[in-house]
Length: 88
Image 1 (cartoon, one colour):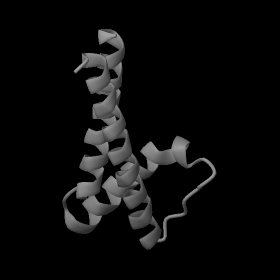
Image 2 (cartoon, one colour):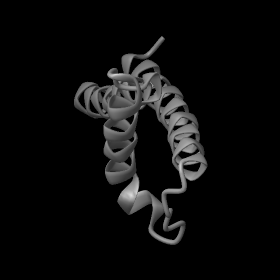
Image 3 (cartoon, rainbow, N blue to C red):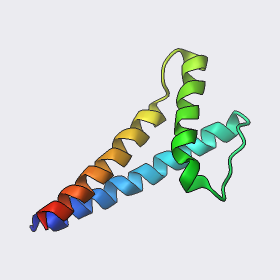
């Protein structure tokens, strides 16, 4: 299999996983009565992820698992996309 296709496929997969984690984070924030701006959601998503981190840290003493899932998946998507473009 071509390295470019493999890297881009992994980048798309991780991007999809990142979207799922983003939706779950937004849902958790809505449960906690945090106001979400859906018009600028893509722009504010890092802010919301860090709000989720702060809130779960205060509530439980640990960072919520959705934060790490989002962080790893979004960074993996970027890494594989850049790697795919370099290997092209």
